Image (cartoon, helix red, strand yellow):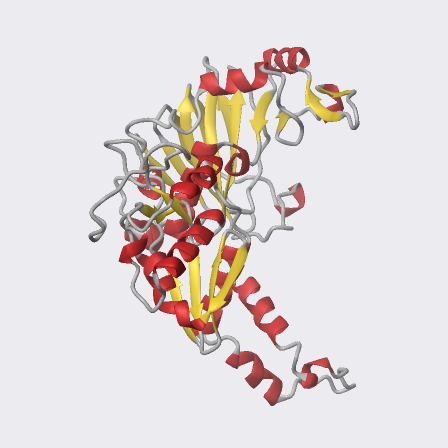
Length: 422
């Protein structure tokens, strides 16, 4: 099988004058220097990396609107306070409704009361439920090739949300509003796995290796395992914590071993002498060839990405006006893998796999790799005009493509002269 990795997916353009997501986190450091010197190795403090700030992602006004609208439900939010255990039942309520009630609804008055007494409001999984942050995370995933998640921490003045701890994923801290003082210590456990959370048994924090106060537009990168704590000063603080969960060699080895499950020799019982046969090591080694490791990493990544479908209802309605001259483009939040063989072509993205006849591989490669808007008439290959429209229509419905200027049915669709898209 010929494998084509479609790595050049595009992300939602940043505002005019700003850079892509990774650059906004680390500038003036370049990507290559960051990966070589800091990634998984040491913290990076980037003062004013977000030169234009981060309020386009989530602002203090957005936080207040969400808290006071009574629309939040646990676990989309929670409260934390260093030294205290706040239970969800202390600040949520169940609202009766038919046929089924709303559980874990925010009790705004109690949340505001806890906030006044020093509790931090945490908005969780914003990469799933807040479009600007979701697009930012997808852009960062495109740059790093690993899953990305996001929480927001809104901490009142002179307060601390969490005690000393380490994260089991790499973290980019983006300070949005106010100030927060950070203390960073050497790791007690280098590069911990998901289940290896910090506890006192790992050792008390040592000397402070970094002490800094983050202000709006400042960023801090912490590799997983680096102990830290943060406290506010005289102002309320809002920051985004962007977590990156890397695909490790433990993941690669597990996946390779799972791929051996169809080999009967791996399913035999271990004899008393417990000597591992060389042939089994050879089989495992064959599944750890770089091309195989890269393929499994990529497929697992794509299978777990959720779609970001801004404006999809409008897109579906506008399909009635699709013509050979309608401009379409790949969604900027799509990351995809195109695999072609003698029998089929498979397009994997957003947690799903679309299977097509092998004869449309040329058409699929064009739509999957073309960076600029194009028209169905521009698509090369053996399909006739009706076939091209059927293909484009399906890819719009699946969320892979979008009409560049969707027009509601009944309106006159935008048309071009049918030449190459620019």
